[in-house]
Image (cartoon, rainbow, N blue to C red; front, side, top):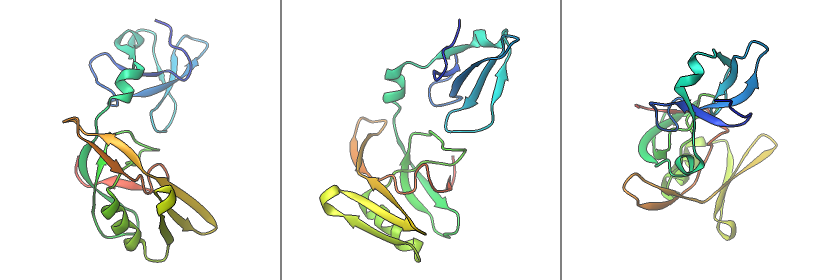
Length: 164
C-alpha cells in the first residue's frame, strides 16, 4: 500500500493514538518517511515493515475518548487533575481541565498575567509579550459523557502526565 503525505498511520494491531505517525513521503529507496504524531524526529520504515501499517480513518481519530489523569507542568510543584486523549505535542502531554481546575492552574502560575474572559468562555495567559487563548472545548469520555474543558497550556507548555 502506498501512503500519502500528511496521512496519519499506525500499526495494524494498535488503536489510535497509540503508535500514530504522520507520513512525510518516501526516500529514493522506497522507505517510508514518518514522524511521530505530535512531533519528533523523522524515522524511516522499510518496505517490508510497511505491510504492518494502516491508515487511521478520520472516524477513529475523531472518536478517540478522553480519560482522567493527573498532570504537572515544569516550574510548578503541584499536580492538576485533567483529561487526555493521549495525543502528544512534541513528546509532552496535552491536558484539558474543568473550569475550576483551570483556575487552579492559573493561580499556581504566580507571575503570569492570566484571566478568564466570560464573553468568549476562554482563559487568556500572558507570558512575556505573548497572549495565549484557551477557549472552552467539549470532550467525550470513554463512557460517552460529554464535559466542557479548557486546554490551558496544551500544545504550548511542557506538561507531563503523573502516571500513565
